[in-house]
Image 1: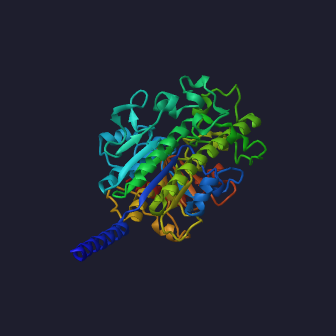
Image 2: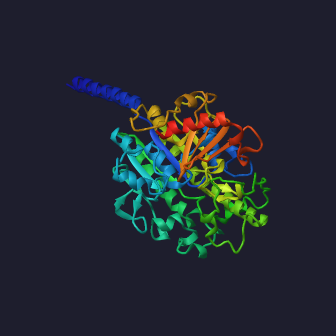
Image 3: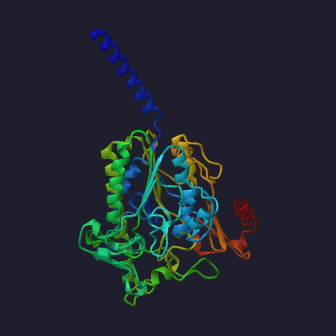
Length: 467
């Protein structure tokens, strides 16, 4: 009888082993999406040698960095819309709410249908926490209905998500922009600024998700800084005390018709009566505080990646690090985003997946934010939905020297296409800008009149995209 019981026990142990092995073999990889607000490629791994960004740089060493990644719109809402829906869409910050009323399709919702647990923490869609209403905390107004199992936004002492979004140290929130400093640095721990609370919540959710072996997870974390107002603990600003900043490239206001604007989002804050376009010392102060905010964001990313590794989930997790658009630091006499110049549209993107062979590579292939959705489908083995308009970047991840494709972007009544050598902008009234990226003049000289054939060719490509 004892021998019979022993044989039965051995049978079930063996069966359990093979079932576990099979389950492990077939387990779909997790997804960790890290979004950083207003982050231009101002990172050491993207060529900004003076920036202190050790954690993102370390991620880049085990990943492929897309040096020529372009967003599809130079504002938070529409850029995140293309990321999270895989579709071109409205150019305003209400893009998600428009989508919610119309077709309600999204990337997290798609992965949720494929058996993923979906969680967002912080600013992932346009409103931190994904809700609307006066203070962005109305649970009856959702940016992405059906997308997240949890969409979380810790508010700590900042009262509400809107306060967190435009917050400085110790619970200070924006009421009247003119009375709020455009930058700030305060002694204290990371938690004295909003991203500290967001990161702590992300770590908590990561621990919970990593324990669940039955379902893969899709965790999206949205870091707010370096969004305006620039604020970070003083220890991060101290890193830039003695640093010599590089010169601002082409700082003059462009001549003729362009997508130049007067930096109203930046200028409405308290600037102590100073204008960075006229005061070089103040311009350097602004740039140092932006850099400090980048280093602060980098530290939060480091905590998240360290926790992923500590849980052991890193062994089966795809990591996408993404900046939602660029940001002018004086180029073209702009301080902000919202233009269709290179500085507003180019942002950092880094992708890592388990077992990848091309670690530490930098690719100059031109790609779009729109491509992230089909890439994640390709890497996880999930079917790519028909509504996703981008293309998978898996082949470039496998061979980083492969060519990319032209990048399309839009703002109000202007659209643009970026090729390997040129950028064309087409205004709704027919006016055209053409810039040559193979010359030192870059995007400072409109050469459309001298190259009518190229203009015609690129206009056709743009019109094809619009259709």
